Image (tube, rainbow, N blue to C red; front, top):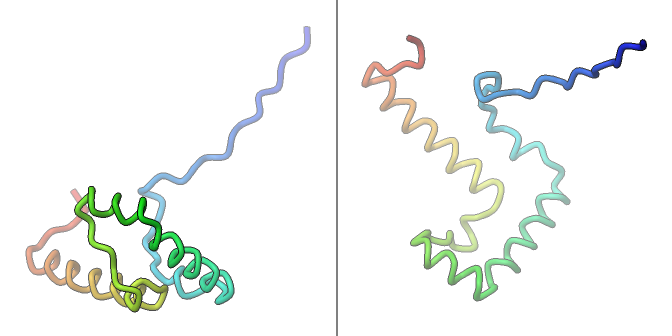
Length: 95
């Protein structure tokens, strides 16, 4: 009798394996970001989308604040703000 070969699936990364890297926003080709931004602007004019944001009580960023450079700047400032607070409180992820 022949033994069946079992192929092992590659191990998927879990959240403990992933280190935050927020620079991925800046390294995407400009043409891709431009296309995504244009599609986003079209979608955000759709009344269904606008109504859903209102249902969720989620604010829509104004047009000048929702591009890749703006997202990167906001993320950078949020990380700095929370990092300062976490360090001053003496919080760490270690046991």
